Structures are given as structure tokens and as C-alpha cells.
Length: 449
Image (tube, rainbow, N blue to C red; front, side, top):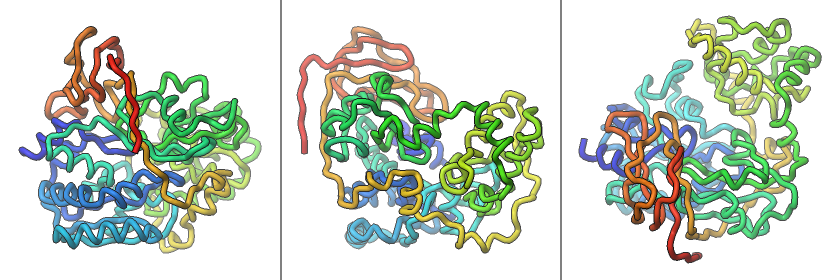
């Protein structure tokens, strides 16, 4: 309990994905503890850097978590091509005598999807709409393990490692304070090469697309892993800007019912009863959303269906998102009808190679093979959201005009709530409080390493 309180105090959440509060996730006893080092999204190098350069801290975090959840088996899963990272982790393992196995994967997408990873490592299928805990497993990524290590040292989560890539003059890894603006991150990478551009926050497959005009309102949070600058006429911009009604009309006229979207769906291939081609067929005949669309609720929105599988260029993912929202409005929840595929031996032959995927989505030119250089920066102003993750927002503990010290608790949630504490990421004065706490520094400075 004492260790969980330290993790709660530090405000640790999952460093990627939905950002599930870590102290809640670790309040369990399990058979398997899987450390996710697969870096699910293509292009990003954040987790690779952590495994390569911070391996000792990561494995000490792993050791602590394994003790907390009383894991019987500890498995570190990462891609077999990560040779430098594997070497560094094994040296740290030998140094500290940590009992864990390495599970080496091919470079496929989405290797780092939590449920795909559980299936790969354990052979168990997480129930549709369920969580790994239901099959005796906890999964956590390497960035989270680094933050757990810091939490044991009494250090809160106040900085983030971010891959800044794409159409920037100097692609690099940034070590930044939580709440720094996305514009400052791009400027730290030498600025954009383009006048008109869009930004992907996260990775190219599941990240959020924003225009250059909106970047001043966007900041780095505890879950931000990447900032990718792309041209405004890029294929991914076109796909993300499609009007939903246009996509539905396109589905009605162009879907050929080839079923490739289902054949290659990662969740279908681990036994879940999701068949995107049938959802497309239904919406082609009727836009009245009812329980017959229920399997859309277990779509993980990985994007394989729209960006890789579909030969007609339509988007089962966008349709699924639309349908999910309609089902939730009607309070229709998923009920497993046990109709998932019984034979999934074909799965090995339907995995999507990352290299081929990058070519398909016109992002291969941004794939930097060498390790990115790292640069740590300071800023004079941060806007720290009160809710940076799944769950409830934190409640402010400061008011406008208050002086704030680096690492000071500025917003909190009650222990037991699905949320996370928030800490000041710079020294300064609180100048605004709304859905974020804005802090400005009295003195400026920049450092790099």
C-alpha cells in the first residue's frame, strides 16, 4: 500500500494510450506482468531511447512493480530488431539480478496494442471489451516504469520525452516540461520546413491531427509521445478531413464487401467477434443505429482497416467511431455473443509489417533509422491540463497569483478515484485557472544536452 501511495502521490499514469492511472492498475495480484517495449506506433523513438539510455531505472521500476502486484512471471516484450536496447536491458538485468524473460517480436503493427501483446506473450485472449486483468495479466509500458522508479524516489511526473519528427529541420527527442506548447517543441526542432502544415500528436496511425493554426492551444501532456509535422496536402490529412456523411455515402457506393477489413483486423485475429465489413454492409443499407451494430464497440481504432486493408480507400474506422458514439448515446453496451472466430491460426500470415505500412501511408520518408539526438528545454510558460488521461479531472489546489515551485502539488484527486495528481512543471506564478493551470516563469532560460 505504501508503494501505491507513492505512485499516486507522484501522479503517474500510463505514459501512452489512454493514460490509465497507474496506482489503480497496480492494485491487483496477477500471474503475468508484461512490460511493453514494442513502441506500437511507427516512427516514434521515445521508448527506444528510454530502454537504451535509462535501462537501469526502468528495470528497477519493473522490479518494484513486480513486487507490488506479486507477479509470478515477468516478461519484457520488445521488437527483436532493437538490438542496442536489448543489450542495454540485459546488462541492467544482470547487474541487478532481476528475474524476467525477454519476448522478442517481429516489427509488425500494432505490436504494442495491449490486447495483442497479451495474446502474443501468453496465448490468452482478453475478453472482448475487457482488460488484461481478466486473464491474470498487467501490461505497462517502459515510460511508465521510468516514472514509477522516480515515484519511489519521491519525484513527481513533471517532464515528458517526445519524438519530434517529419517536416522539421532537425528531428530529435525533446525532454520537456509538462504543459509546454506544441509550437515550442517544433521550434526546438529547428522549426517546420513548410509554410502550410499539419501536426500529428502521437503516432501516424492513431494520433490526433491538428492544423498549424491550432498548435498554440495544444500542449504536451503526460501521454504525449510524438509530434509529427506533415504537409497540409498529405494523404493522412485528406483521410482525416473526410466528412462523415461523405464517408457513409462512399461506403454505400464503393464498398465491395471483400472483407479485407475483417480479415486483417487485429482484434478479430485474436478471437474477438468484430467484423468491420458487416458494419459497413449494415450502414450501407440503413443509418439507423441499433444493437445489431454492437461489435463496433470493441474496435480499437488502430487504423489498419482504412489505411492498409481496404482496396477502395474507405474508412471502417471512422464509421466505427460514428457508430460507437451513437450506441453510447442510446446507452447500448457490448454483450459478447461468442461469435468470434474459432480458428485464428491464419493470424501469423495476416500481420502487418511496419515498413510496408509506412510506405502505404506515405510516411516512410520520415523514418529516421539512427537514434535521434536528445535535447532538454525549459520554457517560460506552461498550461497544465487538469485532465490528461482517462478518468476524472484533478481539483486545483492553487489560485491565481500564487507562487508555485517546481514539483509542487497544484491539483489533486482523492485516493481511490480514477484520476491523477498534477504538479508544477516550472517555478513561477499562477496566471490562469480554467480546464488547465497556467504558470509563467519570472526568469527565462534554455538548456540543451
